[in-house]
Amino acid sequence: MGAPMNLYRGLGVSGGIAIGVAHVREAGSMEIPEYGIAKTKVKAERERLAVAVKLAKRQVRRLQNRAKTMPGAAAEELGFLLDAYQQMLSDSRLIRGADARIESLRINAEAAVQHEIAEIAATFQAMDDAYIAARLDDIREVGNRIIRNLTRKVLRPFSSAPKGSIIIADLLSPADMAQIDPGRIAGAATVLGGAEGHAAIMARALGLPAVLGVEDLLSNVSVGDEIIVDGTTGEVIVNPAKGVLERYRRRRDALTRKNRQLDRLRKQPATSRDGTRFTLLANVELPMEMPMVAQAGAEGIGLLRSEFMFMNRETPPDEEEQYQTLSRLVEDMQGGTVTFRSLDIGADKPVHAAMGEMDDSAASALGLRGIRLALLHGKLLENQFCAALRAANHGPMRILLPMVSTASEVVQAREVLKKAAKKLKRRKIAVPDPLPPLGVMIEVPGAALAADALAQVSDFFAIGSNDLTMYTLAADRANEHVAHLFNPLHPAVLRLIQFSTSAALRARIPISICGEIAGDPRFTALLAGLGLQELSMTPSSIPHVKQRIRKMDAVSASARAQLIMDQTDSGRIATLLDDFNNLA
Ligand code: PEP
Ligand code: MG
Image (cartoon, rainbow, N blue to C red; front, side):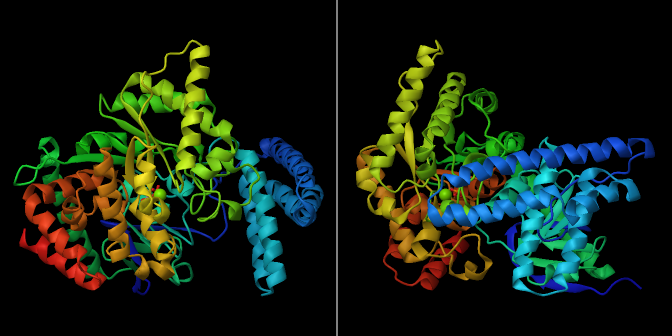
């Protein structure tokens, strides 16, 4: 008899069905390779650990020096913590234990550190004490730093997961997602996370069925359990009965057939029944999506999230590296415009290579996120602009600024862009003339309400409905507890979209939308009815939205949007929209 079947529910954030074997990642641990070593290699492996520890000591010393320059209480607080790290690195159970394990278990140093952390964690957890729990976090921090130093090269999380496995974790960060190979991993389910968070967006980009926000998941799944992830309904089934498994296999195959049928729309124009032409663009998170962008028939990239270049590394990429990556993307688009968005880190996307030693809380959702942080570290923005301007010699490009809340940010960014152009010219590098259009994301309610003012200093707008919804309704997009409040059909959100769209039309600047609703066919008629004709989305959504457009009458959509905008209740709005969609 097999293990008992269990059904768990969470948020279905990335559609499709995945069936596979559980690969469980324990909370707080890092994904590392584990392999055996020959007896003759033990000495060298212990030496490798010693070198990584020495490097960690140097890194912490650098942090200690930097901490001294901080104001009063912060310096003291951080100083204590870093002293404790330094002690741990000098002589502690962690280091001694890891060193001994290399010899006794004959395993690689990374795995030895990981095992030692797990054993210390098990002892500490048995004590159930808040103070001790915090110390455990410190041990993990130090241990993970050593592991990072050991691997040095870019980490490949989940590389030890068997092919076709389902990742089960407490949380997957966007940086984790960026490293998942969809050819290897079939799906994912986590305890934490909301539907519009960046991890969810990445899962959709990778076509990886995923369910987030599943309570009690980790305590009920063991490595090797058979798992079904239904990313559409939000169900996770552990050790399904034979009949259930069969049913899901049939549904998975039917979905694959349906998607293949939609592929036929690739070369068809996105034109409504009454002749309105729409432009469907791709949101790109990772270069590995480029084949999907072409496959989906995107006319350009409406949002290139440049964060991927900074993830999973210790230091930011230099201008040359960014230019190489960007120019390849631009060339891949073969004349389709690439909308390059400058770095948008912060909130649920902390990217340490660009944040330096800055605390995550400083880059919170209302903190130094996006353009705010970029302007503070002007050099970082200038480097990005230099790389983008050079890449713009390979094909059409627009530059987009995230998280703009005031016109002065756009003015300052334009100055940085001009400075970057001047510097390149001095280096005798060609720069497009005129410079690429500089646009802003409309994703802060204040920016939407002041869209007329922003239109005067911007060349185009791109509505980011994910953050616009989050900030308007004060509902964290990555928090499963407020997922029920995150509703883009709330009249407040729709009014901001309508207002920004009409401001752009009045100022005669292009406007597009690139939040997740742009890729959901349920919203297409409403967005079209509000005047949006450029929609940017995850590549796999393009055929679905195109199909909706080709069945839609744009004039009727506009009449329905007007009726919807007269409503005050989001339930009524949803009914009016769904009824309209059902008529098609
Ligand atoms: C948005 O906020 O809607 C958006 C497209 O930007 P991101 O999801 O990258 O924050
Ligand atoms: Mg955003």
